[in-house]
Length: 142
Image (cartoon, rainbow, N blue to C red):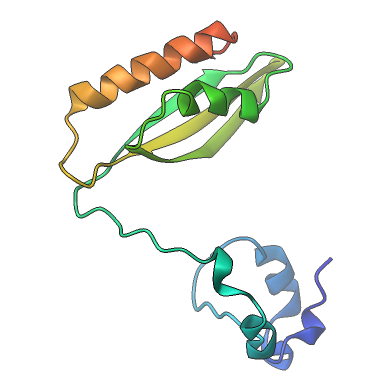
């Protein structure tokens, strides 16, 4: 449980709503509170900046039927081993379970710094990823 009473703005917030909203952006106004004294103690060694691409990104959602015992780390290896510099991010966007069958939807986000990617390029990578996933027992959800 998070102790909201340590916030400087504690007297101005709806405590119940704040506790229910932790971890979400919700709606309405948002605030962030930074303890500058603590912030200054953070070393700059771990801070890096990557220039965002000026090219349009594209994403592909895969809804997958999970195999018992396969972890997200196992799945991640299926796209990481391809070494695609164009694959910028992978995130879980949905989980679903019905009648003992578990599925997971992941979003793969692709972009290039040099050009807008063609769909046939991305599709070839998706096909490789799906083949790698199939090799560990994960199939596309129908």
